[in-house]
Length: 296
Image (cartoon, rainbow, N blue to C red; front, side):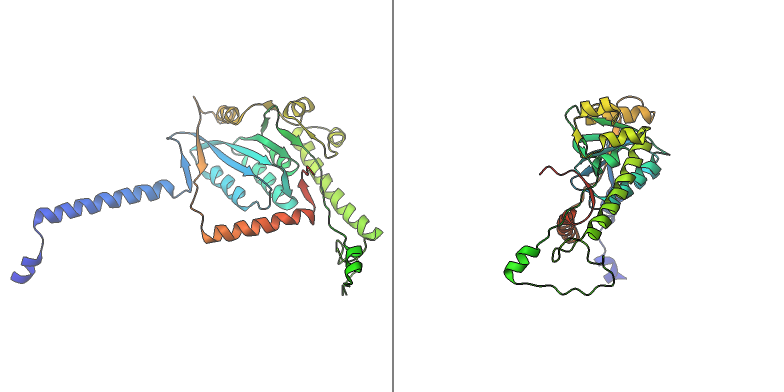
């Protein structure tokens, strides 16, 4: 006992270490609890959740997850979807659109447009309860685009031929190594027009406008925010801050609404690989039908 007792620190020192350990444990627990939901907010009470969609739309996963988390959070009373996008691939655009429609059955959603909300960006916006844009926001471009290179003449000059084995005459439709046939054109045109019809239906339903009225505006052209307001494509002219105010009113939040944003994380190797994948996928726009506004 004598040797063991001699190695033990004094009682007051043990209490000091125990106190410091407990303090740091509480601090760590608090930080973990504050960030466990993956969001950072301003203060307590009811808030407006912010979702941002920036750049080409090539995936819906992260946006859908954010919307679902806001739907479940009891301290989020309304959502603002901030859109600054020229559009993107058809399926991800439609997934985000459908998710917003689902979420707004429980919480109001305001679509706020930045510099541009064209084609797929506009498709997503119409899912909200209210659409806001700045006076000079680029809006519209309701339509579908698809193009691919035909390099048969170049290949002939170089002396390269392709041998293709296929199960059907349209299996290699869109190939750059053979001439385009009338059957190719008809097939791709039918597919593009079907997707176009889906876009028109979504706008007609969401904006409570006749399809013929939408079609008259849906030839691919873009409009300013002011023009869009006159044409019925949006509801209000206003800034991002205005959209938050409107969302606060719709969410029955008194005073200036506080906001909650997805918490930014440090980029990892997986994020870097995903970013490279995103750049690769974005190059598919020229080969796949897309709800995308093209400036060139």
